Amino acid sequence: MELSQQEFELLRQYIHNICGLAISDNKTYLIKQRLEPLALKAGCSSFSEFYNELQKGDTDENRILPQVEEKIINAITTHETSFFRDGHPFETIKEYLLPQLSKTIIQRKRGSKRRKGAKVRLWSAGTATGQEPYSLAMLIHEFTDNPICFPDVVKEDFGLLATDISSTMIAQSMTAEYSQFEIKRGLNSRRLRNFFFKEKEHWTIKSQIRMMVEFRQINLIEPFRMLGGFDVILCRNVLIYFDNPTKSRILDQFYEILCKNGWLILGATENIFNLSNKFKTVHVGETILYQKK
Ligand SMILES: C[S@@+](CC[C@H](N)C(=O)[O-])C[C@H]1O[C@@H](n2cnc3c(N)ncnc32)[C@H](O)[C@@H]1O
Image (cartoon, rainbow, N blue to C red; front, side):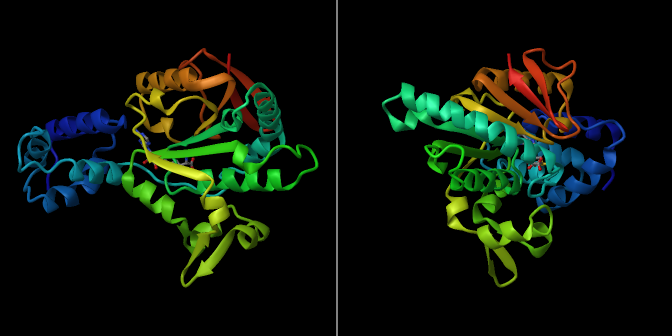
């Protein structure tokens, strides 16, 4: 199927509108390769026809949305991830953030009669297949299992939310099942033994870790303030796909829902230079953390 310049422009604007993804001029192949199978499946013989189908309003009973919209998002977004991705950010969370968060928990417990009020909340935004929040859950489990430093802090004091725009990613994350290839990326043998069990061809995360993570479908280009306050937001390797105005809008919302002195963690190659001046940069070893000013 041919993709004219005009069709490319229309479809990339459509994609930008639904998920924020910015497709550069030299990426026509991305739309052609990834959307052609969807267009054909929808019975369209050209990209223009496909685009017109996507434009049909909510009231049209023949409309192909929203299933196709979901498929477009899945086809066009990148879901690359791994357990303990890049290593050092998780070392920093373990050695630097978890002790600080534990102090926050203790302070909140003293100030709050209701036990719920003491929780610290962490959010993995753009979780893909779930390795990131489950890595956090494993760290928290190990940390609270070792009562030497903070005997009064338990894993129930931590709330973990994981979100993605894609319902397919959320459903896959919730199965907590990983292939041999996936568990080889980032997990040591001790964690594999402690937190997984083998079932036929795949490995499943034990319920003690699974139960620690709540999953929800959230599109970051839409308002998400209703998610409430967070102490730590991880949005790693997600903003790289957006243009600068979209990145700045999302960073503004992160700022708003972070608690006082809350932390933002981006991907190892990302930064907020020229995007937001609302965060203080804190270097811990190789890791850059952004703290709410
Ligand atoms: C490369 S993965 C990052 C996974 C994980 N955070 C990591 O660093 O390993 C990017 C994820 O962002 C999600 N994503 C893309 N656009 C999004 C949007 N507008 N709102 C929420 N999630 C989005 C994709 O579905 C994908 O799962």
